[in-house]
Image (cartoon, rainbow, N blue to C red; front, side):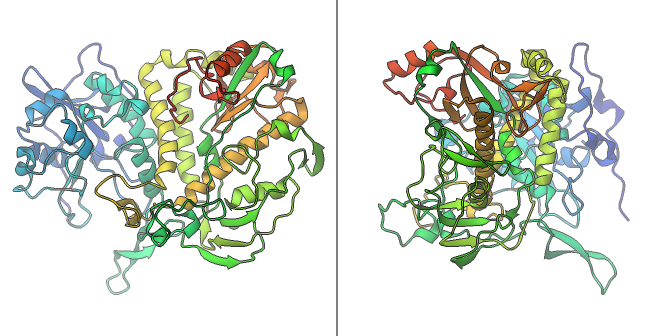
Length: 607
C-alpha cells in the first residue's frame, strides 16, 4: 500500500512579504502531490534558504548541501506537474538556483570560459563528489546549466530533479529576455506561467519544444498483462507517436556529414537533385518605379508562422519507403525528386480559375531564395502539392514516402497556440478584435506587464526551437564527418518533419502573397521567413491590406493575434530603404530584416 506523503511542516511555510508579486497557481496545483506547483526558485536571504514557488508561496529550505536539497525536493517540497498525456510521465520538479544559492551549496556563480564551452563543470568538482556517494547520478551532459540529478526509478516513483542555473546562461536572453535578472519571486512567476501553459522547462526553449512533442505523444504505453490482470510497461508503440527507437532518414534528407553520406568525396557539394533544401524565405528585389513614388515601406509579420504550418500537417511516423517513378499523392508525406521549373507564376490557378500576374515581382515558392528552379530537385510533400494547386502537372522521378503517418504535431500546436493566446490576452490583446482595435492593443503591449512579455517570447522560441531541434546538428564532442552524433539516437531526430513544417510555412506565405497580388496588384519587395514588406501610401498596414466592410480578403493577409494571422512589424520611409541599399551597394538587400526599427547592421539574427 502506498504511504501518503506528509505535507511540509507549517513552520516551513512563509507568507509573501508586501509587494511580492502573486501569480495564478498553475493547473498542476490541483494535484495534491504537486500542491506547491511545478518549480521553485531557491535563494538565500539573511542566511536563510528560501524556495519561492508559484502563486506567491515561499518555503523554508532546511537542506545544507546539494544532495540534501535534492532529497528535500523529492520528499517534502511537493513540487512537480502532472503528465500531459495518459501514457506519459509526470514532470520532474524544477529547482532554479540564484547566485546566492549557488554560493551556499558550493557551486560557482559563473562558469570559466573552458567550462562554458564544455557546457558543464568538471566531473571532479567537489559538489559532484558529494552527489555520487549518496547514489545520485547525472545524465551524460554532466552538471551544466540544465543539470538533471536522478536515481534509477523504482516502480512508478519519481526520483529525478531538474536544476536551472540562470547565471550559467540557462535562460538565454535571446528567448528569455531579462528573466535571469528578475527577483526570485518574479522569476518563479514567469517560469510558473510558462510551465502551466506549455510545460515545466526541460532545458532551452528548443529542448522544451521537442520534449513537449514527446510528452503529448509518449513513445510506449502500458498494456494489460493477461497473466496477472495488471498493467505493465511495454515496448509496444503508442499509436500516433514516433516510438522509442530512431529511424534512418532518406539520403536526400540527411544533412552534410551524416553517416549515410560517408562514401561521398570529402569536398563534394550536393546539388538540389541530391539534397532536400526546405528552408524559410530570404528573398528581396529592387523597387519598381511606381513603388519608389510611394512614401512608405510597411512590414507585416505572420504570428507563430511555424506553429500554423504544423497545424493539421500530416507527417511521417516511421521509416521511409523508396519508390521509383511514383504518382504524386498530396496526402502522402515524403520527399519527392521532381522538376518544377515549368511552373510559371505569370499565370496560375486561384480558386480553380487561371489568373495573370507579374511573375517577375514574385518569389518562387519552391526555393528559399525565391529563385526559379532550373531542373529536378528534392521537395517535401507540401511544396509539390502547392505546384499542383497552382495548376501545373508534376511527374516525380523518385521519392521516399512514409506510409505510416499521422498528424503528430496537432496536439503540440494546440497547446502552444493556447499558451500564446492566453498570455497575449493577459497583456490586453484579445483574439477576435477588429483590425483597428488589434493595432491599438498591440501598441506597447510588452510594457503592460514586462514579465508576461517574457513568457510570450519564450513560447514563440519554443515553437521555432522545437522545429529546428528535429534536425539538430553535431555539437562538438570530437565529431568528424561520416560519424554519428548524439542527436541521431533520438526518435525525435526527424529532418523530414522539420522540412515538411518549413515547406508548408513557406507555401502558406506564398499563397497569401499571390492572392493579395491578384486582388490588389501589389507585390512584396522583400520576404524574410514570416515577414513581408510592401510599398504603401500610408504608414499603417490598413493602407494596403484589402478590407471591405471590415472583412479581409479570403485566404489573404488578415490582421489578428491568432497563429497564421498577421501583425504590424514596422514602417520605414522608402527613401530609407533606397539609402540603405545604396550605402551597402546591395540593390536586393533584404529590408525585411531591418524594417522593425530601421537599424541596419551586418548581423543576421535569423529572424
